Image (cartoon, rainbow, N blue to C red):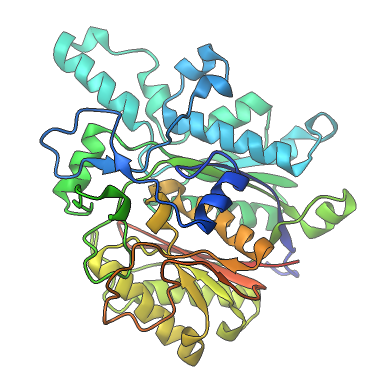
Length: 414
């Protein structure tokens, strides 16, 4: 860029997750090793190979948004608005005293409005095209969550969505980081949301043989690194971060959760859904983030892995970690918090980034639960079943998506 990079920090966080609708609830559940997986309540699962997921139990949009506005938002937008407004409040920003043209939003979704899609498809099939709602398209499109956040809060800076499957919200954070580096905004609201526990989505992932079918014990189904893992457990929710420069945060006395010290992105260029078997793309993304952070691999204390509990994906990521980290791979703390909250798809990266920030705050590595028979190929410390206290200054967060999209963030404690 021809000049020294700005130091970008996180000054606000917001989360709506299957393990809680606040960072306090989320952290307590993670520390206790709770599983959010349970039988699906949103629709009749008769005939489905998978009949469970990690739903947002007890979430009512009307508790946060007026009923008229809520009725014109698909759940993925409802979750987005709640998480973003939590983060804005948490940041302490006084929007009445700031140039709103200098506050941007990058908020993505892997699938967009799947709930409205399923409902309107049924209306069309039952009663024809004249029964399609005029709100169908505005509620469906993946960018509308970013639009809702900006409209509700009058934020007039750069505004758009990212869509890269399960790397979506990490790419949103990377884009927000870049926009601040380019001086296109002073503050950025960034993250992702997903509400894909619907018949077509669950049925589609079942057809792709991506989901666990351990219906007998849903709470044990998400089991990264376990020898008997058989696919991911779908989750839903949203997360949001407020980013600004370190100089700005210090000048206004804001709480700083951590510095976004490094970002990396790559492509596998390998397969439609399967990861590169040697983790080539993951290695490139991690290496890029380390380079931007200006650190060597042995500086990393904790890695929140993508760790979805798919047979090939878990191992490919660990292969990449061992190749890049060498001997330090056997010393770093590793865990997959998807074992507890499920896989939030496009929202996974940002919610797990919040987990990383909380891990730094508490100096604790959250566990990977449900490991009963560790896969013999797993020879790293994946924090089985119980949290571990350790000194954490740098954390690394990975996210990979169908299509070979890879993204990595590194946060530093300040």
